[in-house]
Length: 462
Image 1 (tube, helix red, strand yellow):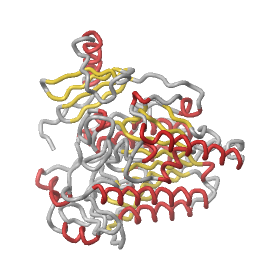
Image 2 (cartoon, one colour):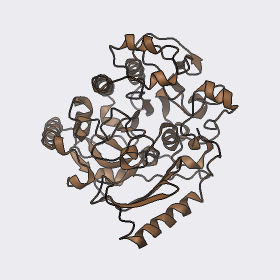
Image 3 (spheres, one colour):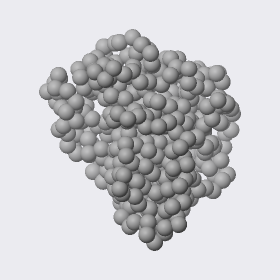
Image 4 (tube, one colour):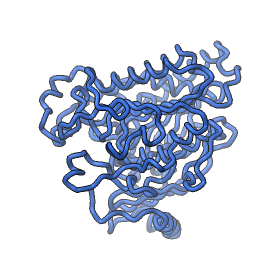
């Protein structure tokens, strides 16, 4: 697909991206990378960052630091310029990926997000993903895959809910929405690091611990027996602590959520992002060293738009917003020999598509009682199908949105509704509601029709 700056392409990094893509393509050709036939059923490595903005990678235009490992991943595969998260906040998006369905189809997907244990105790509630609900892990497991989740879960707490109860053979990470990078405690000070369903203590920076466990997992996998690893980093979500900020961590102990969300700086954020990039690089090297690189479909993306120090440029809004800055996210896909290297695509994609794509690649099927809302992107990824229009919907708080083709309907609150032409106005500055009244009414009606099929929002608000 040709580059198109009107959709928010990484303008300030154009030359850098072009040179990286060319270098990677040349290296792949020299090594015969694209000639050998990959196995019919690939391993799957799904990497999800936490609160990573659309422009937070240097291959998307971040100006103040570099992410060389993720840039290399982009150069070795396909980089999406119009990928979306299923929600503008964590729990609903993770629910969408795990189930392959719109988050508003399940009660836990209405949590925006699942709050900390102590808050739920005060509310007398215990939301979570029901263990009986089919998941990408349980479906792949039934198809013969070994499954693991390393990192962040955020879909309910023990004893009722956990990754182990939802199809994952292995789990190492945190249950809640945020953990201190050094103490591994949630904002209320509760220990939040688990091995399967057992609390554990480890010494180290959270990003490093997640990376080390992923590397160890990959080194254990034998060739010929496919695996699915969902690698859910907690970075660069608050608290804003870089690898050298243990002293900052000590000042937050026992001070609650407000302390977790305070402080930070662009310098700290850059340190967190370099650590994340380095971690992904280590994981990809372990994939290669263990002989799995050629037989693995890799996807890197984010759960929603960035917050505070993120570079959501050139879009409007951030996490919690249904403006593009809150839901448009980076997405990189690599599968040697199947996905051509060095491509940029304007194909519109959403979180649930990755679920559908993984199942299709594995030859697995969705449960007939829980049909998927995503689409298999393999034909588009292989270059067998040109970019095709999508109709997608979002809902969070009082906000609502629908995208159909290049048109976007956006309801900011009960009194404010807009229509934007994203092909000409990706920054959502020029409201076309009055000049395109017919389009506005059509998209609004489509949204209301979709909403009528979803669970009703609870009266309480998180």
